[in-house]
Every structure is written in C-alpha cells, then in structure tokens.
Image (cartoon, rainbow, N blue to C red; front, side, top):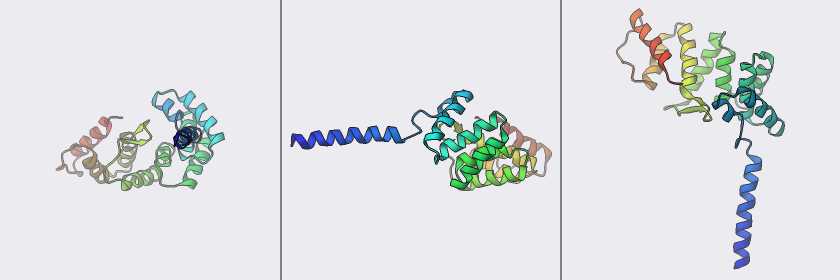
Length: 186
C-alpha cells in the first residue's frame, strides 16, 4: 500500500513538472505586453517560438511586436502563420486589426468575425494582456471610417449602456457614437 502511495505521489509530481515544461505560456511574452515592456515581450516571443513553433499565442505575439517595431514584412509573416493555423483565432484578429488599419475593408472583415464569435464578450480577448474593449475600439473606429454607423451602434448597444433610441442619420447622434467608442476603457 505504501508503494502505491509513493508511486502515485511520484506520478503527480512528474505530471506537474511535465506540464510546466510543455506549457510555453507560464512566463511568456504577453506578461511583458501587459507590463508595456515590448522589447522584453518581443525577445520572449522569439525565444519561445524556437521551442514552440506551432503556438498561436506566440505567433500572434510576434506579429504584434514586429508590428509595434514597424517591421511590417515580419509582422505579416507571423500574421500569415497564425491565419494558416486557425483563421478565426483572436490573436490573428487582433494583429489583423492593427496590421490592416490602413485597409478599412480588411480590418472590418476581421472585426466583424470577432463580433460574430461571441454572444457575450470575454473581458480579455487575447490572454490577460489585451482586453476585448481594445479590439472593439480598433474595430469600431474602422467601422466609423467606413461610414458603418448603424453597425457600430448595434455593437455599442451590446457592449455599453448607450441610449438605444439614437438615429444614425443625425450628425449629433453619430457624434455620440464616436464619443462612446473613444470612451471605451482599454
């Protein structure tokens, strides 16, 4: 009986140790993104990618940090890797909104994909570093640039307490929608 307890304890310890070795997310780049230490985040993502080249988490982080450092070709490379792995993942959608910010139709397509995924939105869209409101702010700004006030207003009614009797044909009501977008807490 004592042998069985010892074996069980040893098995549990080995399982815990194995999980910490296999899990690239325990002390990862998104921790540094949350702390706004983007250089350290980028270095960590690069290090982790060499060990875990199939991780969406890491590919999305690399796309984001390369974008922040204005290395657009590298950002696009990791964006494409993320999309090839799983094209509806939040890492890809977040990086796409940033990468395609000068292409409103592409950014809108990605944002609308994000909105359609959820009946109620999680607090964080990308781990615990990027809040859903950050994606909403990026996406809704794109919708305004595309003159899609009705769509933006519809999303705002889902995520905020905006008055539900606004008329998107009136400039003053459109201005209220823009104010709500700008006031989204990130």
